[in-house]
Every structure is written in C-alpha cells, then in structure tokens.
Length: 494
View 1 (cartoon, rainbow, N blue to C red):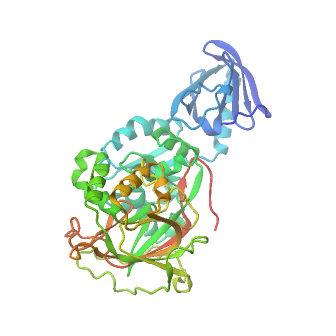
View 2 (view 1 turned 90 degrees about the vertical axis):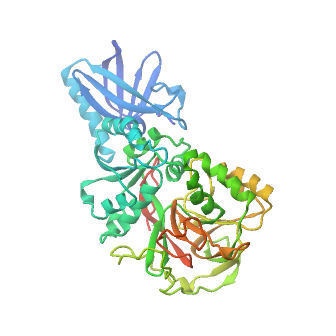
View 3 (view 1 turned 180 degrees about the vertical axis):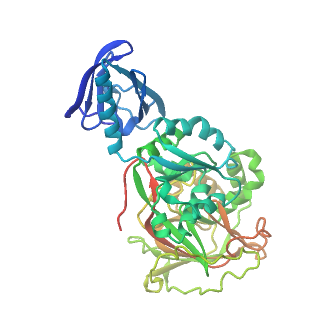
C-alpha cells in the first residue's frame, strides 16, 4: 500500500518505544511515523483496530500484512494474510499522554466506524467450527477495536431470519454473519420481509468466512486482492467501508425468495444438493460427486427466457414475455406461502422489455450475482456486485471429456471461455424447468444460494416440501438494494 511521504503534523513528540527515546509523529492524514532501527509507519485508517491506555503507556492495536513488520516504509504490503502487531509507546509526561490519546481517538471517531454490531454465528455449518472461529479469532479483533457485540448462535434453519424480522435495528450499526453464505441469505430475506423493509435493507451486512461455501466473503476480499481469511474479513468490517449489492427477487405466483448469490438448475444444482449424502467427506464431496454426475451425465428439457444486458442481444432467439399469472405454484409438496408484509419486488414492466429465449436440453443453467460461488469456484468472472445484472452460465450438449476439462477451469474462471459454454448478462430471467431428456419420469432440482427452491418428481428427496414447485419461475434484479461492509468503499446511488 502507498505510504505518504509528507503531510501536516498534528502531533510530534519524543516517546519511549522498547525503552528507547524515539521521535513519534502523527500526521493529519492519519499516518504515524517513527524510527526503530529504520523508519516505520502505521496507517491508522487501514491498519489500526483501536487505541487503549495501559497505565503510562498507550497501545495501538493493528493488523498488518504478514512480512511487513510494523510497518517498514520499504515493505509496501498489501495482498496478503494479516497478522496482529501492536505499537506500544510511553509518552514522557502525563500531559503528553492525554494529548496523544485525544488526537488518536478523535481521528478514529472521525472515521465513523461501526460501534455496535449484531453477530450471528452458525455452529452447525461447514466443519462446525464457526463458534471456535468466533471465540478465538473474531471476538478478540472486535474487542481490540472497542466494538460492542450482541451474539446470536443460530439453533435451526431460518433462525437468523426470524430474529431479523422483529429486531430493533436502531440498536445496531450493522449485522455480521460468521458462517458460510446461508446466514447472510436468511438475514437479507428477513430484512426484506419486514414492514419497514425499505429502511431495514440499508443496514450494512458483514460476512466472515466460517462455512463451506464462503462465496460472498471470497468475492469481497478477492475484489481487492486480499485472501479469504477471517482476519481480512473482520478488518474490512471494523473499517466500516461499504458497497452496494444487487438483490434478485425470485417469484412464483405469490411466493418470493430474495437471492444474493446464485441460482442453479441441472448439473451444478444436482452436485450441490445431491452430494449432501456424502457430507462426511467434507468439501471433497463436491469434486467426487461432480465426477460421478459427469460420468452419468443428465440433460434436462425445458427453456429459459431473458432480457439481455446491452451488448448481449446476440444470445438466443426473439420472444415475448408471457405472464405466468398466480397459479404456477400448485404442487402439494411445496410449503404454503405466508402473506407478505415486506418488499414485493421491483416495479418494472416486463411485458415492454426485449426478451430472448433458448430451448433445451440443458446440461446446466447457472445464474450468478457475484464472481465466486465458493472459495475455489470462480463461477462468473465478470460478475459485479451492483451492476444491476445477473451473469448467466449455460452448458448444453458437451462431450464428457470436454466437460471434465471445463470443470477444472472453475477455480480460475476460464470455463466461461469454453465453446460449450454460453456466458452473458441479463436484467430479467424466466426458467421453465423440464424433465430429464433420457428419463421423462424424473425431474430436477432448482437451487438458490445453497437452498432447494423446488424438487421435481423423482428428484433427490423429492418427498420433502419446498418453497416453490418445479415449474416456471421468474427472476428480476434490484440494482444496489442491499449494503455490505467491504474492503473498499463503493456505494451505488440510484
């Protein structure tokens, strides 16, 4: 990171550092500079957690990039894992100590960082390590930054959603999810189902990777070249920078689901959901079951319709929008929708848009809101957080060897360059899922953000109730509707 060479000094004094009297200067741009064998600097806004008084000494808690020391001007830093390093110094008088505390705390207060956070921890997700991660890694950092935490450990599916729907949001500056992506999705749905959804959804949301997928945390940190690590994610929340996030409304009749990550049907959904039977394998279950599914490849009949983003009008054939009405979700296996008080979805005229269509059979249909679907899956390399579009990745007929090769490109995003992949952006989307091409008695699974929206007849665990039926569903995108704590500031104003 850049180290400014000069700025207006706010305070300069001689202090004790490691028993040696040393000049220490605090500049107006928030840079601390001193000499300890060589010139060192600390950038308060980027690296400092908080300031504490310990008797005659002042401790400045900091997170710096590994290998940078604290913090050598020549080291540059940036792009690596973070380590805890504190600067402890002793002013030579009581008046000097008070003045140093005053100036440092005034600068930190001017940054308007979050001071009160509600934290959800999912103790059951992924490797079931979230509670330990919170206690050993997350909480000490927030404590060092002087952030007040209110902890909720989720006890069952949709627990976080229930809490958020009745939460007094005025008590908090943000909500943090220490989990995989599932708790974040619950929180977004809970906020948008509130009567005051339009103000509730502005609540900043933070994600700390502690689950299986961690796609949102990976996407946020990778966007600035940071690794998907707990310390990097927590520092981004402490600093309080924000960015906007698109939210998709998936609806079928009167039933709605709000998505922030992805929707899948076909190969990707089958691997994601059916591999649960091999959960004892850990994350390896996905790779192993993917190979099994490719060897015994399925294709699904059906069709998709979409409103392409500018520049992508060449995909598909022209068609017109057909309103699905209110009667598509009549499958008795689906959950009964509850009358909604919250957000009804974007107010747009779908009939007046320029629609295109592609007919099956399909190997896979995959929609993505952010680049990464997991820490090792760069599903949509061109996806942006708040461009108002979803990235669509479609695979049709593909030789099995080519498909295996294609899947190895998921970690780098090169799969979208395959001649067997259609990759484009859309503003609105309609999925009409059908039966397997090789066995019309069996249908598939529609998966959004890791949760099953619909299971067709003969699909894995098809007897379980789902939110929607295996039928036509529609998706629209709200640009920048939600807000995330982010490593860098990037807010969309509509």
